[in-house]
Length: 81
Figure 1 (cartoon, one colour):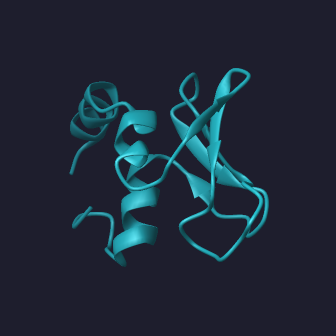
Figure 2: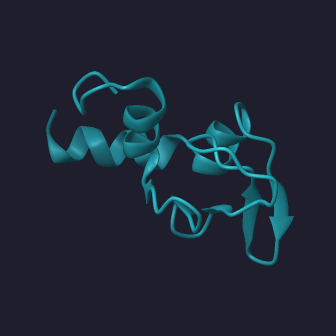
C-alpha cells in the first residue's frame, strides 16, 4: 500500500468514531478516554486524540494510529489492517 493510499484512509476515518465503536469513550478535555481494550483495568487510562488522530494507553503503553489499533486489536499485519 502506498503512502497516498494510507494518508487517504487516515483522512477519511476519524479515529475517535472508529475506536468508539468498540470502546466506550468520554470526552476528557481536548481528547477522549476509556477503558483500555488491550488490558484489564478499572480506571480509564486509554486516551484518544481527535486532533492528532492517535491513541495511547498510559497503563500498558500501547499506542499509535488507526492502523496500529486495528493491528493490535485484531492481530493483523499492516497490509491486512
